[in-house]
Length: 407
Image 1: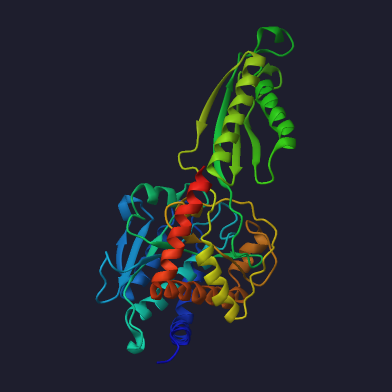
Image 2: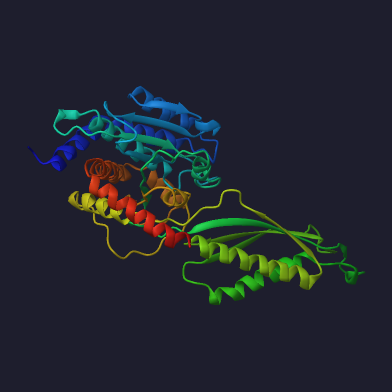
């Protein structure tokens, strides 16, 4: 019997060539119609319509999350208790003002392309190596702001999923990007208004409290670990310089890799703000984000498999790359099921969330690496379908590392 790896590589190539134009069209339409968190109605309808037309069972507006969806295909003799389920996570939200400067149009394209390949595999193309299993395309809105995947986790989306995977366009090839957990906090300081010239002694300066809190954070940075982050902006500090501000609002972003470190930083921020309020005679109120993001715990079993398959296609993932240190709700998924989130180079060494990256995400130069990443993703899933031993290793590693990661 022929080598199954070679067989499925041919299947992947055939499927992508057959749908190349349609896949690019999906990407281009989403890129030209940027929609922000939970307003991705065009992308939702485009993707669900395409997948349904191509034989997937589709649930729109999954669990009443208006721009989430669930699309699945399984082999003829699939049995949930016996056969694995792989989820391909599909992002499609854009950034305010910058559009698709994070390349989520390409993420959507890779998820759909990989799904079509796995549909062909599970449908028994060639009937040489018929695999039993299920593939799910999970439409995950609001990655940039809103934590769509966190909401999906809370609604039980991953209860019957064994493995989750996605890829992300990048300015370089990064097999396991350092993804920090993140939460944010709106901090309101309340004081007492007074005339700044005629009776400042009658006032309690809320802006002084906010500034003091930031000064304490700034001094604390000398003692911070390399993967800790505390950043701040001021939203409100009064409207006239002739008055002592009685209310000042600021927003703090808190980031760290592990949950224990994130909770430690949150505690330090609360200490600093309480101390600033006490020193100035003000009061303080904290409003934490409803959907904080966890750090990413990459499945090394899955990522090394992805690297091996990519290398066979001439794509090199180096051992040492600059740490990303951004955040994504894929981190939360990685603490629920074994997951990967490789970054793939789209032709230019650009930073995400920039106008240059937005243009590159819509370029033809980005297409070939995007389709190669989709093939690699699908073939990684195929290896998991084929090998009981690989699935066992990935799940054992997940259980061991999760205990250490959560702390």
